[in-house]
Image (cartoon, rainbow, N blue to C red; front, side, top):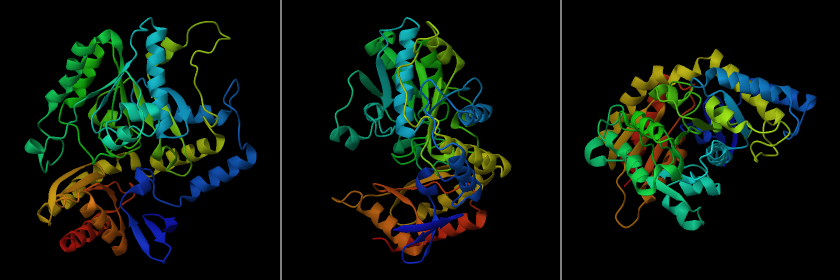
Length: 411
């Protein structure tokens, strides 16, 4: 049980300080307990606690959208606010379908995801997602297909940076075009770095090739940046880090530093203008949420952007990346370590599973780390790390040493 938090640390119910190696759940990029955010939210709640977003608006939502457009990849400056990453994904998929229909491409109703992808827990996100248990437990939408995943341990173990092998896996989109016909495909959605499946880094050149194929066939490219957005890789968005501009970006989590649930979908002007047609009194996009652009969430988001800007957090991961990678890769000789993947301020330590008991070793490492004073995330037998961007080099050293100690005593 966690009962408090400040800076880089949680406080457990038994009074211990727990070093946060996961930024909460990939979201508290500026660290915990930021008074600037709390003060902004408190002031906003007293001035305007709620305003509907249907036929009406409020200034803070527009101000926040303008600020987000300033840091977004070039051209992605039309913003739709949601309440979470799952809502952002379902919104992006609906925008893609509506856009194709609006421009006279109504046969484009198919959505393409990727194996091992995670896109939230809405029915759209589960359907384009590629995590087996999510798909197995719930019904999924029809008219969805999947690219092959990019994990290739036979060629890419312990990479220092992006995997050198696997760019050709982007050609799987070409295969699906040949199978289904480009005229049936509305959009393809991928995580630039696949997070929940165990931090899978894209092969060098993979995202650029995916962009080229999608453009050639009139398919919208959606980047799910719920995890990678707001500085995780050393740029405001992964699209800028990889120099690949999609048509739509989904975001959430660090959008408000995790303080208040909120998401945002960034679209290109082309997509926006394709939808903004018809009579002025008509609805262009039959979609919206009660809490879109919630005033208090906007206040939290604006305060978060100020912190990210003033403290240089959008680029801090790039500054720490070499130290981060060197520390994490030093664990390659620790017991049971099968692979390590790291870039920016995100990493995964993949452990060999116990025979007949997959996932148990990862959970034991998670539990032992918590007892020792470190919060990590266990995805099966993969330990995922994504600390707040305010982490220091000394704290990276401390995190690495604690992991090393735990790995040495975990059978």
